[in-house]
Length: 156
View 1 (cartoon, helix red, strand yellow):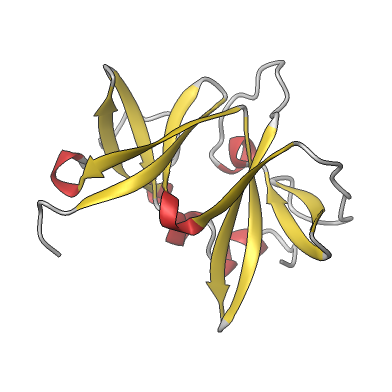
View 2 (cartoon, one colour):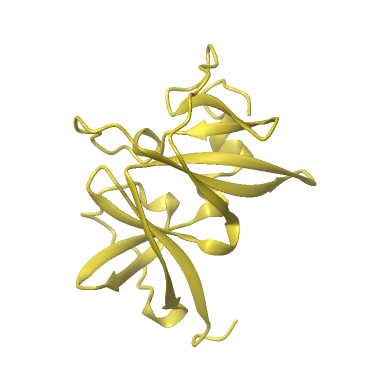
């Protein structure tokens, strides 16, 4: 792909950090609904929500990304659609606030630093500077992979 390619990203905050996900993967953003807890799931899987008659797994990105949660509970869900073995399934990611869709050129995304980043670099595509603030561009393929979501003994 050319270095001058520009893509759209949904920006959001979680635990005081600024993040971005490719907007093509996001189907909707919802106010926080009731979450049904699933016993024996890994701690970063909060449970499931009813999404128009279908269950969507709720991922606590704060825990998944090893962030300090603080005292404020997430207020919204970012619904991300992923392909798992030929089936498209919805995954709901917790966020404190969703901001806007922005365009970021591939050339403006710097590789993650070797140290000093607030989250594990295996989930990071890179850093982009937006309005004077560094935004962590997440690697949705790794973050929401079946292997990552089922790690720790839980099932998707």
